[in-house]
Length: 215
Ligand SMILES: [Zn+2]
Image 1 (cartoon, helix red, strand yellow):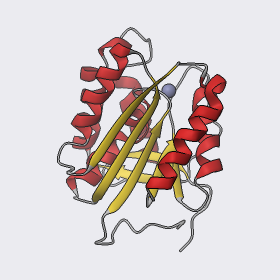
Image 2 (cartoon, protein in one colour):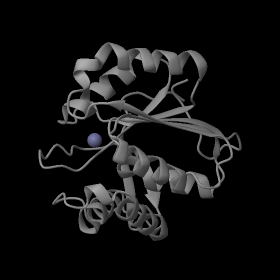
Image 3 (cartoon, protein in one colour):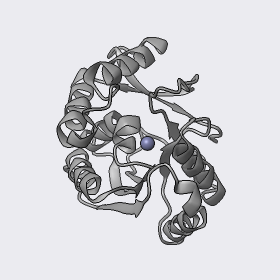
Image 4 (cartoon, helix red, strand yellow):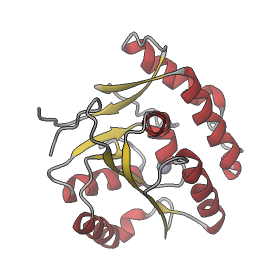
């Protein structure tokens, strides 16, 4: 179904897709913390496609932190190679088909179709190829390429979720700390600007692109 009711008492089955180890947390980590605290999650399948041994451990620990309190969850970190996911396109497609054959999510979080990172773009494209009757929210990842667009779906975040999200990113992803953009200011400023764009009563928001939704 292309619809979801966040206010409904029915809990959500979520599928989270990320090309790289920290993508899911950066893109929708605050939303996840909020959904967990509001007890809105039935089951989560968290799938990361590219990793190394070091990054895999960070990703699993961080995912466990974000999903603390969720009883039913699967965290899968695969070993495809960063920056060249395109070379494994058919294998990745098979992974997604296999997920779809065994799980029907109410809501999918994936990369934005106009993301300029080649791995992000590929995963977004394959998500839409495979999941053809599902509500998909495309999250955003700030980067050097300057591809942030004009999102049209926002989830407000209390400041405590913002703080918790960023603290976890910085604490768990030690291997990323040398990257010039991987810091508190990058993450908090984007969330504040997105909050500004919807006059968020909480001042902060995570933003998404939704291509189609039905009611
Ligand atoms: Zn990424």
